[in-house]
Figure (tube, rainbow, N blue to C red):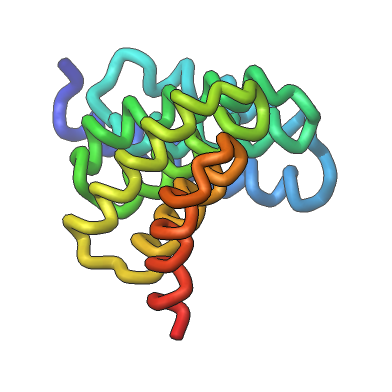
Length: 168
């Protein structure tokens, strides 16, 4: 294990890489930005800095998505979920967002509706535990749309009804 000083230095270096990544990405220097993600993962791989590692994988997701590499985006998002669950906890906001994004990618990228439903339901449980009514409503809408696409109109109507009520 790293000493406190070593751990602090690794975190500071990781944070600096994230800031440099954002600058390069926003300037359209995508390949250079990607190199920083690789450096960050290599820096952190043998540490217990799960939240920071998860942030790097979350940025990988976005990077891959922007490049049209959707299967890689999904795999990176699943890693984000894994690290956020360990680092932030299974019922915390960043984990909820990561789970929601995994559901979206399963639905849009792979068409694996059962996996998308599983992750949307996990997101719903997280948002219910956090008492986040708009996110709860959003997950009900997403689940309702899946039911609708499966021609289960009764279930879809119930889920979308919850979403409509929350918007008012």
